[in-house]
Image (cartoon, rainbow, N blue to C red; front, side, top):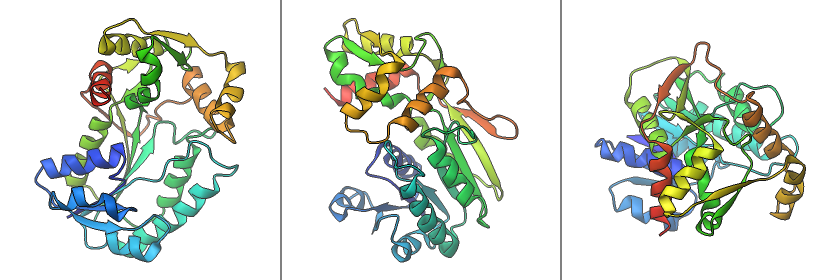
Length: 287
Protein backbone atom coordinates (compact mmCIF):
# COMPACT_ATOMS: atom_id res chain seq x y z
CA UNK A 1 0.00 0.00 0.00
CA UNK A 2 1.23 3.47 -0.94
CA UNK A 3 -0.10 6.73 0.50
CA UNK A 4 -0.45 9.67 -1.88
CA UNK A 5 -1.18 13.27 -0.94
CA UNK A 6 -2.62 15.89 -3.26
CA UNK A 7 -4.66 13.66 -5.57
CA UNK A 8 -7.11 16.45 -6.36
CA UNK A 9 -4.26 18.32 -8.07
CA UNK A 10 -2.18 17.52 -11.13
CA UNK A 11 0.86 15.93 -9.54
CA UNK A 12 -0.80 13.84 -6.86
CA UNK A 13 -3.28 12.53 -9.41
CA UNK A 14 -0.43 11.60 -11.78
CA UNK A 15 1.37 9.75 -8.96
CA UNK A 16 -1.73 7.80 -7.93
CA UNK A 17 -2.51 6.92 -11.54
CA UNK A 18 1.04 5.70 -12.15
CA UNK A 19 0.92 3.47 -9.07
CA UNK A 20 -2.49 2.08 -10.00
CA UNK A 21 -1.25 1.42 -13.54
CA UNK A 22 1.59 -0.60 -11.94
CA UNK A 23 -0.97 -2.71 -10.08
CA UNK A 24 -0.22 -1.22 -6.66
CA UNK A 25 -2.68 -0.53 -3.86
CA UNK A 26 -3.12 3.15 -3.09
CA UNK A 27 -4.42 5.13 -0.14
CA UNK A 28 -5.30 8.65 -1.28
CA UNK A 29 -5.18 11.54 1.17
CA UNK A 30 -7.48 14.47 0.46
CA UNK A 31 -9.34 17.22 2.28
CA UNK A 32 -12.76 16.96 0.62
CA UNK A 33 -14.63 13.70 1.19
CA UNK A 34 -16.88 14.46 -1.78
CA UNK A 35 -13.87 14.13 -4.08
CA UNK A 36 -12.95 10.69 -2.78
CA UNK A 37 -15.60 8.69 -4.63
CA UNK A 38 -13.72 8.62 -7.94
CA UNK A 39 -10.78 7.05 -6.11
CA UNK A 40 -12.78 4.60 -4.01
CA UNK A 41 -14.52 3.51 -7.22
CA UNK A 42 -11.06 2.58 -8.52
CA UNK A 43 -10.30 0.47 -5.45
CA UNK A 44 -8.31 3.02 -3.44
CA UNK A 45 -8.54 3.57 0.28
CA UNK A 46 -9.59 7.15 1.03
CA UNK A 47 -8.31 9.16 4.01
CA UNK A 48 -9.87 12.56 4.57
CA UNK A 49 -7.69 15.11 6.37
CA UNK A 50 -5.75 18.28 5.81
CA UNK A 51 -2.05 18.72 6.38
CA UNK A 52 -2.54 20.51 9.71
CA UNK A 53 -4.44 17.66 11.37
CA UNK A 54 -1.51 15.70 12.80
CA UNK A 55 -3.50 12.77 14.32
CA UNK A 56 -5.52 12.16 11.14
CA UNK A 57 -2.51 12.61 8.87
CA UNK A 58 -0.47 10.25 11.05
CA UNK A 59 -3.17 7.60 10.68
CA UNK A 60 -3.25 8.12 6.90
CA UNK A 61 0.54 7.65 6.66
CA UNK A 62 0.76 4.64 8.99
CA UNK A 63 1.26 1.08 7.73
CA UNK A 64 2.33 1.98 4.19
CA UNK A 65 5.41 0.85 2.31
CA UNK A 66 5.83 4.27 0.80
CA UNK A 67 4.35 7.77 1.00
CA UNK A 68 4.27 10.67 -1.43
CA UNK A 69 4.29 14.05 0.29
CA UNK A 70 3.03 17.08 -1.60
CA UNK A 71 3.26 20.32 0.33
CA UNK A 72 0.51 22.87 -0.44
CA UNK A 73 1.54 25.46 -3.04
CA UNK A 74 1.44 29.13 -2.11
CA UNK A 75 2.04 31.55 -4.96
CA UNK A 76 1.37 34.63 -2.83
CA UNK A 77 3.01 33.95 0.54
CA UNK A 78 3.04 36.29 3.48
CA UNK A 79 6.54 37.43 4.51
CA UNK A 80 8.41 34.64 6.24
CA UNK A 81 6.20 31.93 4.67
CA UNK A 82 4.14 31.35 7.85
CA UNK A 83 1.78 28.91 6.13
CA UNK A 84 4.76 26.84 4.99
CA UNK A 85 6.23 26.86 8.50
CA UNK A 86 2.95 25.58 9.97
CA UNK A 87 2.50 22.91 7.31
CA UNK A 88 6.10 21.71 7.71
CA UNK A 89 5.66 21.27 11.45
CA UNK A 90 2.49 19.22 11.14
CA UNK A 91 3.58 17.03 8.23
CA UNK A 92 6.96 16.41 9.85
CA UNK A 93 5.21 15.45 13.08
CA UNK A 94 2.93 13.02 11.27
CA UNK A 95 5.81 11.41 9.39
CA UNK A 96 7.84 11.06 12.58
CA UNK A 97 4.98 9.20 14.26
CA UNK A 98 3.76 7.14 11.27
CA UNK A 99 7.21 6.04 10.08
CA UNK A 100 6.35 4.93 6.53
CA UNK A 101 8.95 2.62 5.02
CA UNK A 102 10.08 5.29 2.57
CA UNK A 103 9.06 8.82 1.66
CA UNK A 104 9.22 10.83 -1.57
CA UNK A 105 8.73 14.58 -1.16
CA UNK A 106 8.03 16.77 -4.17
CA UNK A 107 10.58 19.56 -4.12
CA UNK A 108 11.79 21.91 -6.83
CA UNK A 109 14.70 22.93 -8.97
CA UNK A 110 16.45 25.67 -7.03
CA UNK A 111 15.55 24.30 -3.60
CA UNK A 112 19.20 24.68 -2.61
CA UNK A 113 19.37 28.37 -3.54
CA UNK A 114 19.95 30.79 -0.67
CA UNK A 115 18.77 33.92 -2.48
CA UNK A 116 15.24 35.00 -1.61
CA UNK A 117 12.54 33.80 -4.01
CA UNK A 118 9.24 31.93 -4.10
CA UNK A 119 10.92 28.50 -4.18
CA UNK A 120 12.34 29.08 -0.69
CA UNK A 121 9.14 27.48 0.61
CA UNK A 122 10.26 24.04 -0.57
CA UNK A 123 13.81 24.75 0.58
CA UNK A 124 12.28 25.19 4.02
CA UNK A 125 10.38 21.90 3.68
CA UNK A 126 13.56 20.06 2.71
CA UNK A 127 15.38 21.50 5.71
CA UNK A 128 12.52 20.53 8.02
CA UNK A 129 12.29 16.92 6.80
CA UNK A 130 16.03 16.22 6.44
CA UNK A 131 16.40 15.45 10.11
CA UNK A 132 13.77 12.71 10.06
CA UNK A 133 15.15 9.23 10.70
CA UNK A 134 13.47 7.88 7.56
CA UNK A 135 14.54 6.90 4.04
CA UNK A 136 13.54 10.06 2.19
CA UNK A 137 13.98 11.32 -1.36
CA UNK A 138 13.52 14.93 -2.35
CA UNK A 139 12.41 14.96 -5.99
CA UNK A 140 13.46 18.33 -7.33
CA UNK A 141 11.26 18.88 -10.36
CA UNK A 142 11.89 21.47 -13.05
CA UNK A 143 9.49 24.22 -14.17
CA UNK A 144 6.19 22.52 -14.98
CA UNK A 145 5.37 22.47 -18.69
CA UNK A 146 1.75 22.67 -17.57
CA UNK A 147 2.35 26.18 -16.25
CA UNK A 148 1.35 27.13 -19.80
CA UNK A 149 -2.24 26.41 -18.78
CA UNK A 150 -2.26 30.02 -17.52
CA UNK A 151 -1.77 31.17 -21.12
CA UNK A 152 -4.40 29.08 -22.90
CA UNK A 153 -7.19 31.65 -22.85
CA UNK A 154 -4.96 34.36 -24.29
CA UNK A 155 -3.36 31.94 -26.74
CA UNK A 156 -6.76 31.26 -28.30
CA UNK A 157 -6.76 34.93 -29.32
CA UNK A 158 -3.18 34.87 -30.60
CA UNK A 159 -1.11 36.78 -27.99
CA UNK A 160 0.22 35.75 -24.60
CA UNK A 161 2.17 37.64 -21.94
CA UNK A 162 5.78 36.57 -21.53
CA UNK A 163 7.86 36.71 -18.35
CA UNK A 164 10.61 34.23 -19.25
CA UNK A 165 13.22 36.49 -20.85
CA UNK A 166 15.12 36.64 -23.08
CA UNK A 167 12.73 34.63 -25.24
CA UNK A 168 15.47 32.30 -26.49
CA UNK A 169 16.86 31.48 -23.02
CA UNK A 170 16.19 27.77 -22.25
CA UNK A 171 15.37 26.57 -18.74
CA UNK A 172 14.72 23.07 -17.33
CA UNK A 173 11.09 22.01 -17.71
CA UNK A 174 9.20 18.80 -17.05
CA UNK A 175 5.73 17.39 -17.70
CA UNK A 176 3.47 16.44 -14.80
CA UNK A 177 2.97 12.96 -16.21
CA UNK A 178 6.73 12.39 -15.99
CA UNK A 179 6.75 13.58 -12.39
CA UNK A 180 4.04 11.03 -11.59
CA UNK A 181 6.00 8.26 -13.26
CA UNK A 182 9.23 9.24 -11.49
CA UNK A 183 7.59 9.29 -8.06
CA UNK A 184 5.91 5.93 -8.63
CA UNK A 185 9.21 4.46 -9.78
CA UNK A 186 11.10 5.83 -6.77
CA UNK A 187 8.50 4.45 -4.36
CA UNK A 188 8.93 0.99 -5.87
CA UNK A 189 12.74 1.07 -5.87
CA UNK A 190 14.94 -0.14 -3.01
CA UNK A 191 16.83 2.58 -1.15
CA UNK A 192 17.39 3.36 2.50
CA UNK A 193 19.16 6.72 2.60
CA UNK A 194 18.28 10.39 2.26
CA UNK A 195 18.89 11.55 -1.30
CA UNK A 196 18.09 14.21 -3.88
CA UNK A 197 16.83 13.34 -7.36
CA UNK A 198 16.64 16.06 -10.01
CA UNK A 199 14.04 15.68 -12.76
CA UNK A 200 13.62 17.51 -16.05
CA UNK A 201 12.25 16.74 -19.50
CA UNK A 202 14.15 15.42 -22.53
CA UNK A 203 15.33 18.94 -23.49
CA UNK A 204 15.43 22.44 -22.10
CA UNK A 205 12.92 24.92 -23.46
CA UNK A 206 12.50 28.67 -23.80
CA UNK A 207 9.63 31.14 -24.06
CA UNK A 208 10.06 30.95 -27.82
CA UNK A 209 9.56 27.16 -27.62
CA UNK A 210 6.36 27.68 -25.60
CA UNK A 211 5.12 30.09 -28.26
CA UNK A 212 5.82 27.54 -31.00
CA UNK A 213 4.17 24.69 -29.09
CA UNK A 214 1.03 26.75 -28.50
CA UNK A 215 0.94 27.74 -32.17
CA UNK A 216 1.08 24.08 -33.22
CA UNK A 217 -1.54 23.01 -30.68
CA UNK A 218 -4.03 25.75 -31.61
CA UNK A 219 -3.33 25.67 -35.32
CA UNK A 220 -2.74 29.41 -35.54
CA UNK A 221 0.13 31.77 -34.86
CA UNK A 222 0.60 32.61 -31.18
CA UNK A 223 2.87 35.53 -30.39
CA UNK A 224 4.41 36.53 -27.08
CA UNK A 225 4.35 40.06 -25.69
CA UNK A 226 7.36 40.31 -23.40
CA UNK A 227 6.19 42.14 -20.29
CA UNK A 228 8.85 44.58 -19.05
CA UNK A 229 10.06 43.73 -15.57
CA UNK A 230 9.10 47.21 -14.40
CA UNK A 231 5.45 46.27 -14.98
CA UNK A 232 5.45 42.92 -13.19
CA UNK A 233 4.61 44.12 -9.70
CA UNK A 234 1.65 46.27 -10.72
CA UNK A 235 0.35 43.52 -13.00
CA UNK A 236 0.60 40.81 -10.33
CA UNK A 237 -1.06 43.09 -7.78
CA UNK A 238 -3.87 43.79 -10.24
CA UNK A 239 -4.31 40.03 -10.52
CA UNK A 240 -4.82 39.85 -6.75
CA UNK A 241 -1.34 39.27 -5.31
CA UNK A 242 -0.60 40.86 -1.95
CA UNK A 243 3.11 40.01 -1.88
CA UNK A 244 4.35 39.56 -5.46
CA UNK A 245 8.06 40.02 -4.67
CA UNK A 246 8.88 36.30 -4.12
CA UNK A 247 7.30 35.41 -7.46
CA UNK A 248 9.23 38.19 -9.19
CA UNK A 249 12.45 37.01 -7.57
CA UNK A 250 11.77 33.44 -8.76
CA UNK A 251 11.28 34.55 -12.37
CA UNK A 252 14.47 36.61 -12.10
CA UNK A 253 16.24 33.45 -10.95
CA UNK A 254 15.18 31.47 -14.00
CA UNK A 255 15.89 34.35 -16.38
CA UNK A 256 19.31 35.10 -14.90
CA UNK A 257 20.28 31.45 -14.49
CA UNK A 258 20.80 31.30 -10.74
CA UNK A 259 17.82 29.01 -10.36
CA UNK A 260 18.93 25.71 -11.84
CA UNK A 261 19.75 22.23 -10.58
CA UNK A 262 22.38 21.89 -7.89
CA UNK A 263 24.19 18.91 -9.37
CA UNK A 264 26.96 17.74 -7.05
CA UNK A 265 25.83 14.44 -5.46
CA UNK A 266 22.24 14.65 -6.70
CA UNK A 267 20.97 11.96 -9.05
CA UNK A 268 19.69 13.39 -12.33
CA UNK A 269 16.81 11.86 -14.28
CA UNK A 270 14.97 12.84 -17.44
CA UNK A 271 11.37 12.35 -18.46
CA UNK A 272 10.32 11.52 -22.01
CA UNK A 273 7.45 13.96 -22.59
CA UNK A 274 8.31 16.87 -24.90
CA UNK A 275 6.96 20.38 -24.49
CA UNK A 276 4.94 20.02 -27.70
CA UNK A 277 3.30 16.86 -26.34
CA UNK A 278 2.51 18.39 -22.96
CA UNK A 279 0.97 21.54 -24.41
CA UNK A 280 -0.97 19.58 -27.03
CA UNK A 281 -2.49 17.56 -24.18
CA UNK A 282 -3.32 20.74 -22.26
CA UNK A 283 -5.15 22.19 -25.24
CA UNK A 284 -6.96 18.90 -25.93
CA UNK A 285 -8.10 18.70 -22.30
CA UNK A 286 -9.55 22.22 -22.48
CA UNK A 287 -11.24 21.72 -25.86
